[in-house]
Amino acid sequence: MRVLGIETSCDETGVAVYDAADGLLAHAVYSQVELHARFGGVVPELASRDHVRKLVPLTRQVLAESKSETADIDGIAYTAGPGLVGALLVGASVARSLAFAWGKPCVGIHHMEGHLLAPMLEDQRPQMPFVALLVSGGHTMLVEVEDLGRYRILGETLDDAAGEAFDKTAKLLDLPYPGGPALAALAEEGVPGRLDLPRPMLGKPGLDFSFSGLKTAVMLAVRQAESRSLRREDIAAEFQCAVVDTLAGKCRRAMRETAAGTLVVAGGVGANSALRQRLRMLSETEGWSLFYPRPEFCTDNGAMIAYAGMLRLRAGERAPLSIEARARWSLEELGPAGTAADAP
Ligand code: KG4
Ligand code: ZN
Image (tube, rainbow, N blue to C red):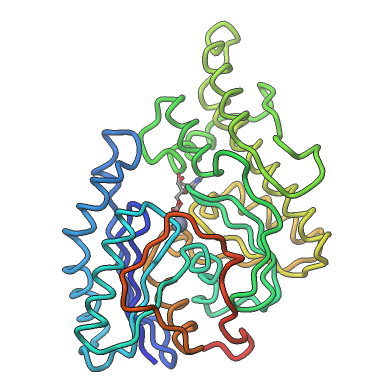
């Protein structure tokens, strides 16, 4: 089964072709970063219009690179939510229309299911059950993954997502958009511990997160930087350390509570090397297996949607003829999609 996957939930247009027998045949991501940079964040209307411009040419390109004719495609998958509804509707409309015109089945995919299945695109795959830490610009959550489509949210952020905290803090430090990678690079030059930042929710029971207080603490530190001789690098390093401490601490608690042996980390912040290094050390001392997608599949991409789509189409799932997109959608609402043990 060969599936065309389309991702347009935010500011990346992603397209891929995944074949159940031959794996990922082609994928391409067009990032709108430059378009939004001068606004310091994603402008939803501009994002939708750019998806309109880029999606069809990118789809043609990926079909050609995968050497697929229309007849070779067995189904189409698109991100149906959660995300920016205007951006989602572009992907949904194109996917649904292509499927209708070509007479192929179509399926709407949950963006976060795409992220948590992204490590399955690698040769070394995690075995289910596992716990997934999903850390992106829009979400921060710990999910117990029993099998395909059987997800229990163990904890999530009560306010800002981890990536959003990186982006907002980067803005406070006058770093260019997108802030996460820029802040991580600045943190490399700094020394953590030269100021006190909170480790939010770490002292409280449970597995929820909260990052907005951390951002406020950084705002105060930036204001006092001159009088306290604080360097921007040191603020960045301590901020990154506070986020990593918090994420790692909650992962340890989730792994102990569920008695899981495998942790999967996905989403844009999963590309952060300080987080990767800390979780690697923790997994060695705690005896867990740790899996990441490669960095290009940590951030938004069409490959994860094509893969999730292949599994759901294979399990018989079909989207209705209507064009559907959901700004909000819980992972726990998804139905089962077969078993991972025999997943291609
Ligand atoms: O998964 P993703 O591409 O899009 C969403 O679904 O949100 O994640 C993007 C987020 C942004 O907030 C970005 O700043 C953050 O991931 N990010 C990073 C790094 N690379 C991307 N944050 C920290 N360190 C990084 N290296
Ligand atoms: Zn994402």
